[in-house]
Image (cartoon, rainbow, N blue to C red):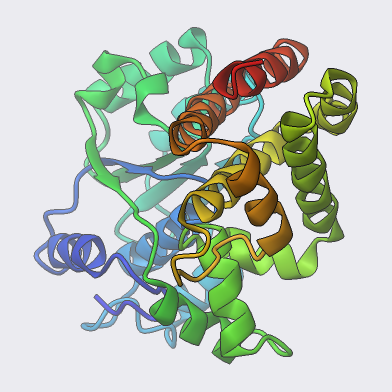
Length: 327
């Protein structure tokens, strides 16, 4: 199977390609990974390969591939939940169950891409389980999830699971600069370093001014911590009230700032690009406190991904950060 424009994760792509080429692809696949790693892109690539008529799949030249690329293939169904808790409604699953027993229109397979499947509630998952237990031989289900832990064990036991990882900065920077106008390899690498090798988030940072605002907020949080100003810390965090993705971004970015502070002055490149913040934190906090702050960021990020209540999460964020610096 061709990897096409899917960059990184060569081992996973090659393994899945071998399964397609040998006609041993599983009837249900779970692709796990954080937002921005290309789960949906890979799912669409696999769907195109499954309906492709050429020997080297997906050829992207045949009618089947062209329809798949244009998302008008009658045998490829795609539904992606918005990402909030329980946002993957049971009615969608019921629609899939109703459709799956109708034979393919054109291809050898019917492919169902279910994005953010970890947003299914228990009822939705149990409904899906029924068809996963005894699927028609032509049906293939591809589920994308941030965390497979949100899926029932009974669902996971009937699926093959693969995980996507971040890409090396140099590889990702080359891809970004060659596919997006106006982004230099140097800027792309800097963004990838900031987002830990996550191509999607790096690209989004160039397109979304919202990220610039959050970056500024993170600097305000750092100043609030060293100045022991609880009010300013709460004010800074209030921007996260209705934006859980912003909390995830902030946790990643704050961790990079704390890491830069820990290594500041040792000739190490700054991941955050916030030299002034790093210098200030270095002068005010011990190494252990900076390490504790990094650990707090990991825990808060996990809570945000698991769809914790935003108000409670903001309170937890302020409390945990202050506790880490001994306030």
